[in-house]
Image 1 (cartoon, each protein chain N blue to C red):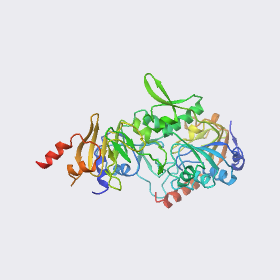
Image 2: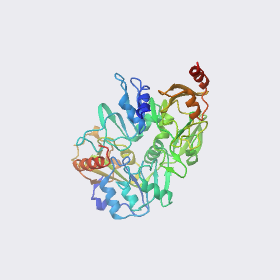
Image 3: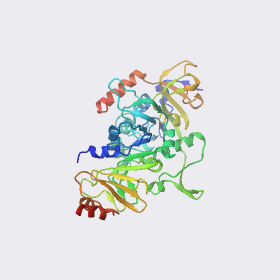
Image 4: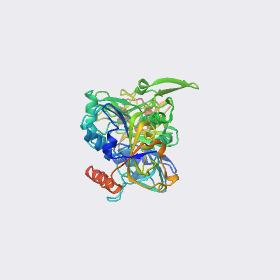
Length: 217
Length: 236
């Protein structure tokens, strides 16, 4: 499965006119696949709305950067502002969607992404505000960790970044909706079977029997 | 009204054990010249209040104060960009006070605006609950955080006039908020211009908040510094 499968799949969730904040890594890559004719306003938590690609050498502005302090450009019509205004947008529910990476997600829509006790100490940054405030939360990640363990758990084992906020999970193998009642398999990545997903997913998948039944018949 | 002083004079406002707010965002829009001067002066036991650590990889901007071991406490939302700082936190050489980024900013804003606390739902259901007091408003649970203030704030703006009025360009990020929240506010600027040259509607931080102005690197110099940094780190 190509790495950009996840990025391409995220891009299908962009709807015209949406205000979106993308996490670093694969979520940011998804901006390369925004469907033609769909206008998406990208927000960056350090204080920018409607930013564009990185500038050419010699054309960067030392004060125009993304949340990772990397150079970006502002598109015509874009705005820059302070971080209090930025988080008023985020926490105040003005941002339609955020796409973030995760270490673990569980069937209640809780997400762990900021800390591994004794191993990973970075601080939460803006992740908790984004997960709380954005209207729709999509988690984009690999289905399993490097040891092959399911990152979609019955219950997260690592410290939470937010509880019960995730709406959709997009992995390299499948797409899930997180509903009140639990996790629903919505789509399989090309070449992946429902049986494989069942085996690779610790969380209960509410509709896995239907998928398996369809595969058999 | 603000007074223009040299970087050497400005750094004397910061003494051992001071709490120092440093504007910017993970290395962008930071007061480069003042940070270099603080590093050169060797002031010790600082409490640094900054939204994140320095530029990715460490050793740059605020990361210089980390390498010099000048910091005993770091008040922030994110330290992931500076491995040296993480090491010092793990070794308990530096005390870490974390809050979520939006909460951090509001705590600084509250400190500058004379408010008694920040009340926010962010962090409910996580370890952050232990970092704050839980309160209920209209039947809903919230976390109450105390305001943050500093002895000295060192911020970065584009231009100032002799009255201390500041104009920003690009993302002002934490700078205008920190400009309100310290006993002494030092603004490092690219350019100092005559009164009136920054028009009233271009002023991002009115001079009432600013005590001292220092001439930083020019815009052209800063552009070179960042271009080199971004090219060296494969970001441009």
